[in-house]
Image (cartoon, rainbow, N blue to C red; front, side, top):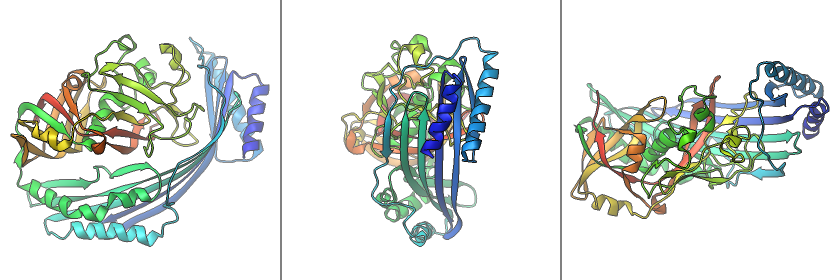
Length: 480
């Protein structure tokens, strides 16, 4: 296939295009799901094709095909070129790409155990056992457990001379239990809500979760929530757990720093951004202890790879430095707007989609606190854990998050449990109220396999390295 893609690129080069790239993507996906002690779905899918992107006379054209013959690749390339030439008739500002070194390389996800080689019975039995343990109480009405694995091979060839091969492996899973007392339902999850946790690596990620060691706690917490007090409506100090901080970073920092969103060329689903270019290097986004990076090299992160889908090498970029906003997520097309080269965040959801700017691993860098010391240092407040709901406006300013469970903090100790807990804020005010972040011992890279963006919608695999953090004077318990 490498020679076929090179021939296709040579054809486009001979026709005088400004730039072109071909991406062969082969994605194998396996999913298993158990409900109430029974396997209710298992699937393994294979998807293979080539996407061809052409820049001609300052305009983009794109076409894709699942037929991999040389003749069809050339036909698809010509179609992409025709679209580019047609689009050029309406262009006001021709596209200019930032310079990029043409790499010739191969990247492989490090892993120990190929999940596709693990016997299906072993995986299914683990999920069934987790459900059975969760359902040991009659108050647990629903127990679900799941695993998903992705094996993706990419071959990227461009008119710049790049030839990049990548073999990516991703694994993840988790479980949840829903307790019901005839009047209301309450849910607890492990190790994270909405499907669990994911990362780049093999089946060792599932083994490290120790799923069966956590079923008793999750079951009992779900039952305890039925009798828990409602979260009070007040303003107080809050400590947010690591997995909940991951979604906080995702919604209030990750999406606002996508430069295509800032420039208004991509506003579907998640809207625009308040972090406009006039605020670049000026906005005090957070307090002095807040440091956030975009790091596609983070070991094990779901946003970790060798190169993005424009052939830009994975890299670590400061986003928030000592609270000040200093970086966007950029492409080769958008980076020149802020006088930079691309920091490698262009990715496509498969072979038949154009790459767009996506988060990599957007990490809140660890601080200095032990979690127990942070709780002991908090005279009055609430500890929030695992997301249940989220809402944020189309500029990423006003937000409200609901969590699965919360606990009162009183005189430095965790106390009674609260249910249906929420907290509310305005993004810069909220992050400027952060006065403590826990250390690397409590820091984990939480995978998000379902970040949606674009139209037609594309799903990206991203991640957030986070640890528990404390915020002062936050509104909680607001339900209307």
